[in-house]
Length: 339
Image (cartoon, rainbow, N blue to C red; front, side, top):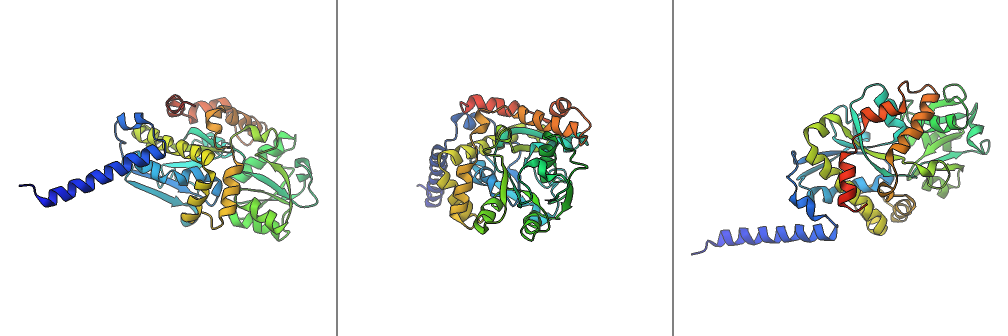
């Protein structure tokens, strides 16, 4: 006699398994993923920051589950007040900007870049007194912190046009992501580096002008603004999990390219952005397919030269690239995903 409880259990198993297979096919998961050993850890922790340009990282949640992570956690910088979640062992993988990664490596932080993510999310907004990067000389510019990505990105921009970011600009520490924009709106600063959804909000309010759009203006449109980075310890202990996590995020970038409407809906449904139109505009405007064609080291070298010339980093860009990057997984995935 067949036990009805076992029959019910097997039916649920079958439905669950076929659902996962269907989801994998729908999301374009490669067959090779199933042939790999399971991840060394079932838990993966990613960093959540208040920027909707990071849609692939958030869209990757279900893909990460298909990769064998039964527990996917997003740790918010806003909740902890500390951007160094990787170093605090409170997160495993995080988006990282090349201009921020290089100073971190320069002081010996155990972080490693794994792949490029996208380009084009930053826009330099300024008031009527500023019409070009050179006009920032002697002007007040807001950053969320003097050790934040906005400072290092703008420092590279200033250095690129021959100015000294340490002497020629008056930096204003606005203490937070939202504080930068509010300082600009209130007229307390002349410029700041905005990223989604700030540019969309400023355009809606008809405040300020765009001096540099990194999605459109050379040379900035030639380089990554965001990378995938991780703790070195996590990568060393969990190489299979690392590859699976990177694959999920890169597959999510492909979804953003192919199905921006779907990505935008996900952002709204998950509460990352309340306005579908804004989310859709951001997803459509960014180069999420860049990981397939651009050399990520070019971006690190470009920003590294600027920061080294300005005296912000002491080590050579090539030395920092050698000690702070690991392209094994990216190179394997490019072949596997036919990049």
